Amino acid sequence: MKSRNRLSLSSAIKNNFLFLFLAVFVSFSARAQDGVVILTDTWEPYINSPGAEQGTAAKLIDILLYYVGVESSWKYFPYEFSFYEVKNGRGLLSYPYFKTQQREGLVLFSEPIFSVTSKVYYNRAFTSAEVALSAYSSKRRIGRVAGYSYGQSIDEEVVSAVVFATEIQALTALFNHDIDVLPMTEGVMNHYLSNNFPLRKQLILAIDDIADTSSLHAIAAKNIQGKAIIKKINHAFKILSAEGIDSIQTTAAAIPDPVDIARLITSEGYPLIIGQSAADGDSIDYYTLPQGSKALVIDWSSKITEPSSTDRIYKNMMDLSKVVLLNGPHVGRELFVRNMHIELLE
Image (cartoon, rainbow, N blue to C red):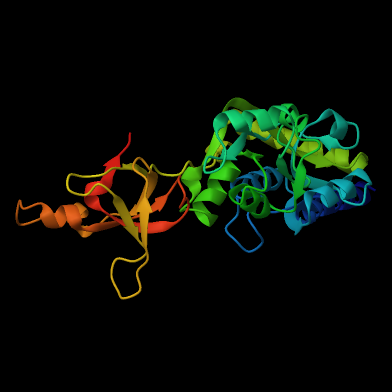
């Protein structure tokens, strides 16, 4: 009888152990296989295009989801469509979004994940700071990118703006003087000017004292699954931030390196400033440039960058450096000018 009881007890222990093992295995498997599709769109440098190195904001949300055992994958659509899918419960998660009163009633928002500053920009080749401010205040000749928010204060001023599909299209309109002002997130503007318009980035300035610093969030569908994923994201961010994980604070976009801005001046014996389309060759066009023209030096001559074995300065003065004009009748044109005409500005 005692032997039979011991056998029953042993079987019970084995069965309990097997049940516990299966429960742990199932739990681990479910955690390992848990996954979510993030609806997004290219928003460099925060969300880079598919196949490119991961943007700073994309890397951040992946870290948060990995921490809570959720495998993430990405699907790219226009932000307007992604928001529509999440609002209607056909998509679970989308990222990143500014939080507005209108959006808040339609989807679930995570806690703030990172923040950016948006400004209003103008092209100083065509527009002065005063004209840009007037255009913005009167809500005329303003551009914006479809589906984007620039923070609540700026959004209220650009409701009737001309809508462009992409940042490149909007910036091109600003360069072509099709619009006077364009709101854009500071990091995004720096990225596109440096990577797509490096020779003209000094033409674009921000209107002083107009800026909106706002947080960005993940959004989820208003259902049980949406509540669960937002809870996990908030939990991960709270824990990792408290632990001082540096990767949680790396969404700031790099500011472009300083550049050499110059004023073109006349020189003794040379009362006019001449710019030429090429340094040498048979087919060279020559342009008369107004004194005081501003230019960005993009390629200094070797007589400037390299030491000389003599102190005779004539050849140094007459050598050519390449500039891009920032104002005047030939704004945006790349020309070669004599070193003696270049005076650097602070």
